[in-house]
Length: 394
Image (cartoon, rainbow, N blue to C red):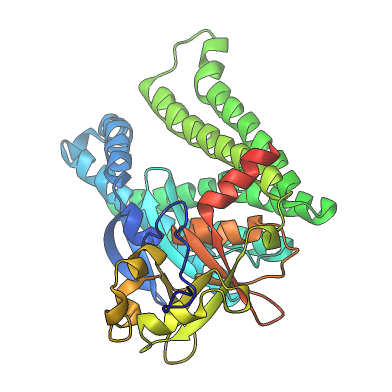
């Protein structure tokens, strides 16, 4: 006897969970503003950087300017605020350049390691990647030149001291960030260069990642090893900054290397091999309408569209099965659907490497993405299945 309800959805191995935007999921810190719709955060680790500056710059300033007394630490704190301005200018330049290329920028964060800008990059090219990376150091170079020019008209004393510190720190940040190793901006330029030459993003990440590891070792040698080789013990300033900068470089470079190795596995998986054919149902439909779509033209998943026809949610098969048959026609489909974050729909061909879609998942903090195919159809990609496919390829 046929089932009067028609084809019923088969529950997946895991229930579909509501996707949460990475910004809300990771809670990067305290929101202090926005830039053209992009939220700006003061990271939870930024106070640690302030303490490091107070512990290193404060005593040094107190010795060189004993007339300041305890005020030396207030000046050190003022320098930390100026450094924050430099970091935000640096990240704002990244964000505005990314937006100019049409990328969606998720957030800007100032933290212990300076800062970072998260933006949608799966449609990136080597040239665009390099331009976005170079925008930050260019902003710092402009600040360095402007501060240096203003020194001549800045009053003597603490104001001139801070203006000079602003000039020198931005000049240092400019040069340091251009060093060719990830996670520095120069590393992204190196990554883009190798990517452009070889045609493989994986190769760029590997080269720039290992270059970052070399830079981390050189930083440790400069701050800590150099005094030892000269026959003297490194001071607290050298140890503190050597540890902070060296660990930052080592961790970032290691992350790039791991990402490249994971990407190498994913590059061997074709997107079309993992997609679940998806049917669309307009908002305002009932659960019964969604049920009728399962199995139609091979559909395994149903997504809900908004009034403009843009997919915004995924129907959860387990939730559908919990609705009694006699109530399905009266139950709104959105009652059994999980809303997805803006940007979860990607345009990719089925022969594209699955990596392109996985990058979007990572940026959104989403467990699924909906792929809009050149043929006009749609397919759902599940992060768990991607991991399983990559493991089988390993």
